[in-house]
Picture: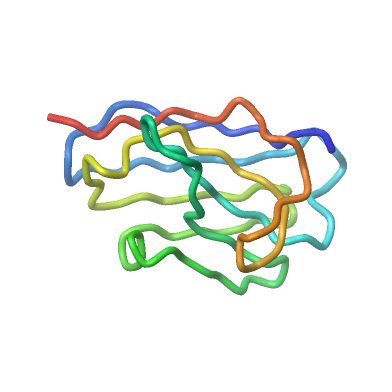
Length: 119
């Protein structure tokens, strides 16, 4: 279960935007859904969004309408566009293959990419 690789994090002011990228060192993600998860400071990791191979999406209530997950199967890349960011979006963001509901993941966790939202 080779972990996926995350990038694109950084510091942004409230109301700003970031786009995170998830890639794999394997040939492909396979048929699994790919999801984004985050771990806020001193809290447990939580589900953010998933996307199936054919484009079905699922979002946590806290990010609906602000975050958009997309998938480029030709490039085997998944993106998370984060708009209208809030301080409570701060955390380390991870991607992983798993179920569409985001309750089960298939691979080891990678290093993640850190997102900080503050003024």
